[in-house]
Image (cartoon, rainbow, N blue to C red):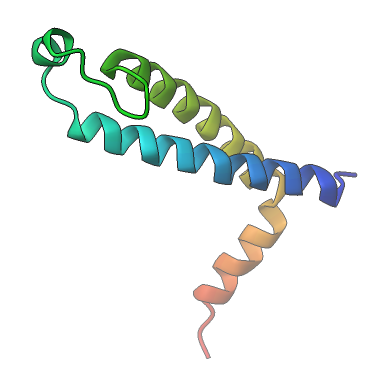
Length: 89
């Protein structure tokens, strides 16, 4: 049986990863093109464009895996919520 503690850890990790993906995504959106970023030594929160990209992609893959695990662990609840949405009276 999966404990509430494991679900809480996964949910907390998802929140942290979401924040990291959001912040690095904003940094990548604001960054200049590759050559310009390299020439002017551009950085966002102390990370250059390529470091931001690595953090963004790595956190995104980890987040995707945890989302699948989260859905698997909470499938019964998810299914009952979907059924209640489409329940006709």
